[in-house]
Length: 233
Image (cartoon, rainbow, N blue to C red):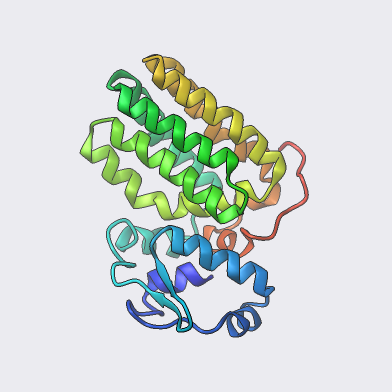
């Protein structure tokens, strides 16, 4: 979709995007979907909207975490199932370390960000807050290697968060599991934080249905189409 074109270099940093009407026609979606997508990309710092002028690709839109690894993941047709497995291997350890190394400022920041996830209405805003919550946990683990690894996959995590928040059957589980993760970290309980993170990441595996084994590049194009609740896999 639009994000993939930005990260692949089809849209150069500083260049103007097509008007919403033209993008909607080209992508075969409604203008509302394009508007939500642009809002989400703006939350992530990939585009900037200028009143009366249009939307522009930000100069740093092809920075770290979206380069060679992102291209390789897309090229090899990675799926949400594979991303979930990778995130479990990474973020379960991150959550445990974050609990062991927490401080009061971190706990306050995590609770505030979790409130933003729950209280935000537009899908793109909720997903952006969700990503920031996971990034805060990664920063709090105190390991620059693990943080860098998380940053290298966060664009794909964001696409999944869009898909999840568009599906009420997934979003409801996410809200409760986010709370469990944050409170386990607040309590300094590493094993509980790890278990809560693992349970959280497995929600999509239970509820995504056919989307679970579609290429990630296709997931981005359907993220703003709120799917009907799916049955457990």
